[in-house]
Image (cartoon, rainbow, N blue to C red; front, side, top):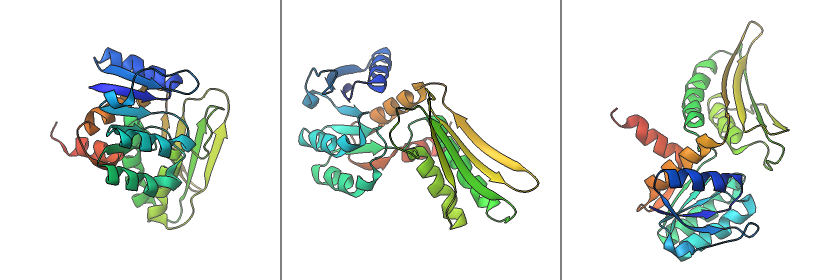
Length: 228
């Protein structure tokens, strides 16, 4: 597979290193700050780890040369319908996700089941907490927003969600159910960004040659349905 990278910050560099380790050729890097090389049109799939404000323009660029896209950037979901329209009109494939960690996506499934159970017991109140490094711009994180949506689908009311931006925390998410008697929590802590890279490359291999607009959780769901 021939890969292009949109953005060459920490995540872009980690994706490049991991891709090369898997025998995936990085044919282009496009970054207005670090510099660019190669042509987007030479790739089969491009991976976007840039800024929320750049995502729509990046989709337009990928669509113009008919290259599939994996969007790892978060904080742009108010433009999902515009992105979907661009993808469908151009006939390319796109995968986006609030979090590309396999562990986090399995946390989504566990949270869905836990919320369904606890919503039947008014003694327990749900809450969500998340923490990330001080450079992360969106708060709450895309992952926390997704968790919030999952829990609220069972409770049909607002679920308190808190965010911390400090230091160099790769990412921590907690979903809790608290009562006067006890507390149950579901927690995920990223030790580093390697899990996001693994998921982004999984998505890139999956979307190569496909058309349509997909959420990363659909890839996880397909894997869960497949026989071991």
